Every structure is written in structure tokens, then in C-alpha cells.
Image (cartoon, rainbow, N blue to C red):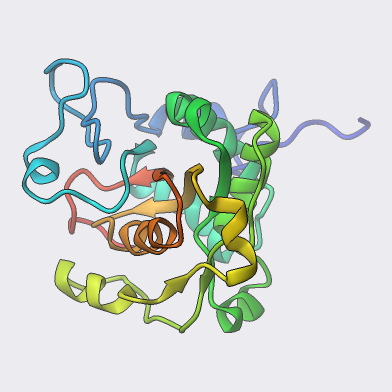
Length: 234
């Protein structure tokens, strides 16, 4: 209330809370039309509910996915500040982005939950970056927040620089729904939150565990996604 508002990216002082004008102008937000399955941007409108060739060829464990922006140098820097730079305050900014890009998914969701970290990694980072986005998003939308509905039961290797097949094998069977949490997800449509989607392997592993435990369906919202799976990693 007393000190001047500072930009979250460290740029020029903004008129309102958020990014500086220069960084904001470089963010490549994803707008419709997009694939109804994975959220990949289409060059032109193919009609409502159309899915890309990859989604048609290999159905995923999650129903739909949406991303706020493209994963590039600008968005990567912001996400890494949240993930490794001790900047959990960026979570609220990203939550507002997801409230816009994932609006239809959020309206249909019965509850919101984050992709979990393994306890050892949570101990080293001190917070889960996906939870720092999911918590304010649930509050903004008035949806229940279920941080303990899904757990990572084994420590997985960092997904960066792995192939599509290696990513799937790395997270296969890594997630589960605790018995005490099953009643809270049975028959419900869940919205899973993460920071980045590359191949979608992590989202699929999480969704498979949730559906196996009784969830009616799982949608996914991420801050950023690559243009084509495998191009970029984090």
C-alpha cells in the first residue's frame, strides 16, 4: 500500500500488478482455434471439437488440455523463476492466465489439483510450483482444491532431454491416489495443473492414476506448451 508497484519480471514499473510492458509484449499467448484434445494451436479454424492427427491416432488418458502460452525463451525464464528461483508469487499471475485460457475446462471442473512432487524433491525446492498455480486458481474459480488427491510414490528422473518413449517410461506408475483420497475424486471431473507440457507424458501418467481410482474424467491446464512435442524441454 505504501511502496510503488514493481514488475514481477523485474522490468519497468507497471501501472498494475503483473509484468513489465516489454516482457508482456513478448509472451506468445495461445488463442483459439486449438486442438480440442492437446490444445495445440491450429493455423485456421477446423470446426468445433476437432482434434489434431496425433490425438486422433493415439487417444490420451486425459480428456482435454489447454495452455496459456507457447513455451519459448520469454515464458521459460518466467517459469524457471517460479520453479527454481524462489518466486512463488508468480503463481497467482499464472493462475490468472489459466483462468482465461482454460475457462471452459474450469467451468466444467468439480475440483482442481496440482501435479505432485516427490517428497524428497519437495524438501529440496521447499514448494511445489504446480501447487502455487493450482491453489490461487481454485480460489479464483471457487472450485475445491485437492492437493493430497494425487501423490508421486517414487522419485523420477528429470524429464529434460529425454525422448518421448523415455519420458513415458520414466513416469509410468509413478503416481497414485491414496486410499483416503479416493472418496473425494470418485465420479468427479478433475482439472490437473502443471507448469509446462512437452510430450504430455506426465499429464497422462497422472490422469491414468486418477481415472483408475474412480475419477470421471481429467482435463489438464498448463502455463506453457511446446509448439511440437519434443522441441523444447524443461
